[in-house]
Image 1 (cartoon, rainbow, N blue to C red):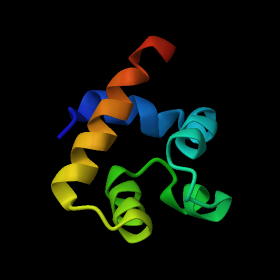
Image 2 (cartoon, rainbow, N blue to C red):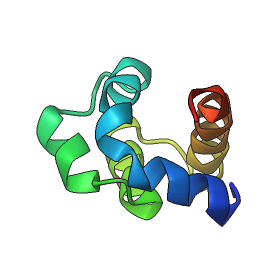
Image 3 (cartoon, helix red, strand yellow):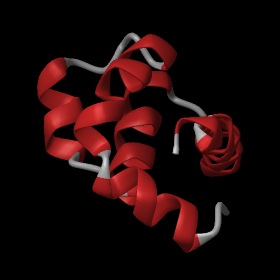
Image 4 (tube, rainbow, N blue to C red):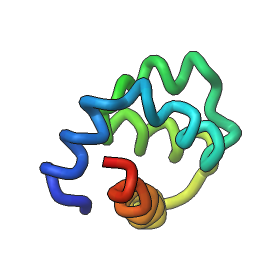
Length: 73
């Protein structure tokens, strides 16, 4: 799982990243993204719900996405 420091930065700038979230996971609605509100566990839950992937697959996908955002900080 991604380190807490990086996820704290993402969470703090969540509104900035909502477009990135929707581009990556198009099945999430605007309402979903708003409800997630930068909380990693809620993002994982919504992704499992929408895409039916395993927790491990979702964790890996979220970690890869979060790491790709480092250049935006």
